[in-house]
Length: 296
Image (cartoon, rainbow, N blue to C red; front, side, top):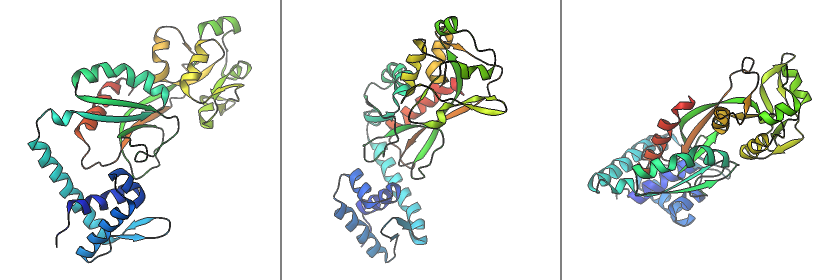
């Protein structure tokens, strides 16, 4: 008896998500149903595809070989189906996007008008989480992640690299004076981050060491930090995507431009299923790559 598409998909999703429970959630099936599909597939092939332990699943050598073939089969079938569908149907449907609130407000929202004009049949759902989420659990098509990527089960596309600026409002500097040296920053009010400690290390050196501030005023996300800087509460360090318009319009003044160490924060779009990414999701990611080239 030949393997079925359902069995192949169950196997692929178990590998991609790392567990039978997560695969079942994504496929909207019962855990027992997905487990039985894997068992049927192994029985038909007369091999063990996945070694099961109490903590994790691990591909066997045979499983690795079969996974490559299974992905190609599912990918080719999806492409064949797409070719038979009307040309506009591939550019319709819902895309669920997750990102930290500042990136949603300052990057994605300003681009949505153009994207929806290009693809009027695509629906967008924006969700803001300042902490890393599980894409399958939250039914998310693509998430925006910052810095180093640690989840090997996800595929990633570099969108841009955004440098850091040390900034303050003109009103704050007029009232408190300009710091004359990096060490003077410690004498000023600093605005920092409460949840991610490394964001309080700024790309400038004092006595040979990178400056780590201990701000009395802190917030959990960059947009709140930005608003406090605009209100003249102190000096802060923020990513270019957050403040480039403020700098251009003189709402924020950059400090120590000639002494800042160039530090660029990598920003990626992450997603499951590299082999057959839905066209609407691929179009959205490619659109972001094109538009965010100004930060590279």
